Length: 175
Image (tube, rainbow, N blue to C red; front, side):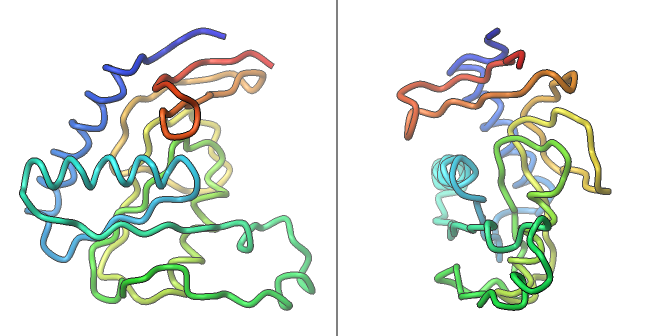
């Protein structure tokens, strides 16, 4: 295991992403942040804290569970699913920033987009990821990236966060 980013590097990446989101959206009006459970939600909360500190505005944060939207379920299993309301605010006509820790094949993001569209009709959806490791199987491109870390297929990225792992770091792990 090789540490790629330490706690201070992760904090800097999130602050930079915060400023990029503010700049691209011309402020934080009508902005909402939706984090993909689990680490994406923690990152979304950190971005919201940065928005509060920088813009003095509380940006709504929601959690999205995409497990029921996976593309590896059979048609019958998908048909039997009930897509429940997951967010406690309306995303219709809002600028949604979807947040995840690592972007790999794009399949989690595809599932998240399906889940979001079941919640409402946003004005825009942009994607913020802490790490883009490449190897896309779907045409998904992040709008905001903390760090590009090209990987081999026998490697994986491990994001550790104090909320669940007692430390902040990004490590490259060889399988």
